[in-house]
Amino acid sequence: MDLRDELRVDERLARRGFRFTPQRQQVYAVLLQQRDHPTAERVFIRAKRKMPEISMATVYNCLDALVKCEVARLVALERGAARFCPNMRPHGHFYCTVCERVFDVDLPAAPGIALPPGCRVERYELAIHGRCAACAPARPGRRGKRRSG
Amino acid sequence: MDLRDELRVDERLARRGFRFTPQRQQVYAVLLQQRDHPTAERVFIRAKRKMPEISMATVYNCLDALVKCEVARLVALERGAARFCPNMRPHGHFYCTVCERVFDVDLPAAPGIALPPGCRVERYELAIHGRCAACAPARPGRRGKRRSG
DNA sequence: TGTCTGGGTTAGAATTGTTCCAAGTATTGA
DNA sequence: TCAATACTTGGAACAATTCTAACCCAGACA
Ligand SMILES: [Mn+2]
Ligand SMILES: [Mn+2]
Ligand SMILES: [Zn+2]
Ligand SMILES: [Zn+2]
Image 1 (cartoon, rainbow over the protein chains, first blue to last red):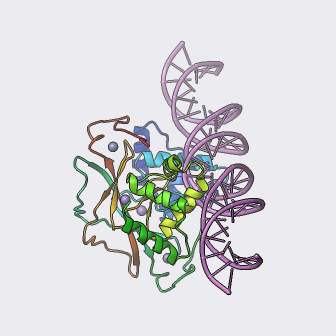
Image 2 (image 1 turned 90 degrees about the horizontal axis):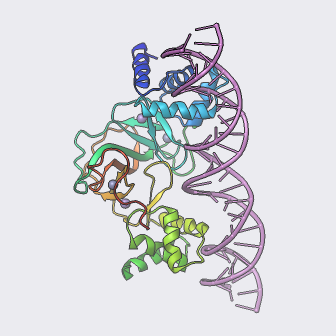
Image 3 (image 1 turned 135 degrees about the vertical axis):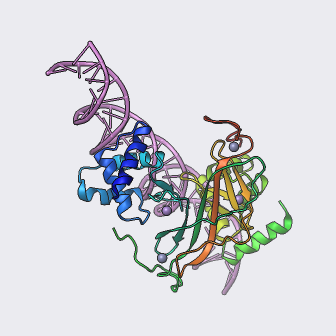
C-alpha cells in the first residue's frame, strides 16, 4: 500500500467524521492488494488472515465507510453479492459470465447518449457481459479458474 | 397489448417448451401496460388486480420464462429488487437516484471500448445514475413521485 | 486523573429478495 | 383414457445485507 494513498484515505475519512481504524486499514489493504473485485465475503476471508478477530459486520461497515468517502467503489454487476474496487478513476467493467472474473475497462471519452430532457448525470455504470480470454473457446459449462482466494 | 406481439410471444415460448398460460399472459400484459420497469413485487401487485389468485412464486416463474424466451429483460440497476422491461430493442437505462424511476435510453452506435485482449462480448449493460427532470432541482432528501402502483 | 461522549466492533437476530419444494392441477399426445 | 410433462400454489429455505444490543476505546474536559 502506498503511504501517500493511505494518508489521503485517512483525511478523506476524517473529513466525514470516520476514523481510519485498524479494521478499516486492513479492509482497504485487502482491496489494494488483490484488485480482482472481491465480494464482501471474500474481503472478509482475506482480512481474517492478518486479523482473525474481524467480523463480517465490521467488513460491511468498513466497506460502507470506504465507499461513502469515495475511496472504493461498490460494483453491482449481477444480482447476488456486490463487489468492491479501489480504482476510483471513472471506468466500466467487463464481467466474464463463465469464470465470473471482473476486469476494469476504460469508458469512451464521449458517450453521446440522448437522455430524457432535464436529466442530470451523476455517474455512468457500464457493465459488459461476455467471456474473457481464458473462457472464450468453451461453449457451455464453466472454464477458467474461479474463486481463487 | 398488440395481437401480433402476443402471437409472437406465444410461439417464442412454445419454441422452448413453455406454455403461454393465463398467468404468463397476465404478467406479460402488466409489463406492456405500464412500462416503468417494475420489480417482481410490483408486477405481483398489478397482476393480482385481474387475477387475485396469482402467487408470488408464479410471478417469478412467469418473469423467468419471459426473460428466458427473450420477451422481457431483467434489469439489475442497484442492489435490491431486479426490475423488468418488455422493450427488447438494445437500450440502456437512466436511473433517478431520488425518485428511483427508470427510463430507457438509446445506446450509442459505436461504443468504442478497449476490452482486455481475447474477450468476447455478449451484451452491454449501461446504467446512468442521476436525477430525472422532476428531481433535478432538489438538493438533498427526496422529491418526485415514488411507488405509484 | 475520572468520567463523559461518540464512533467502532462484535455476534447474532432480523429483513429482503429470490429460489426451492411438495402437493395438487391442467394440458398434451399416444 | 392414460401417462408424461408442464404449471400453480403456499410455505420453507436461502443468500446477501442490515439492524440491534452490548461492550470497547480514544479524546475532550472537569
Ligand atoms: Mn473496477
Ligand atoms: Mn428498459
Ligand atoms: Zn472467464
Ligand atoms: Zn426522479
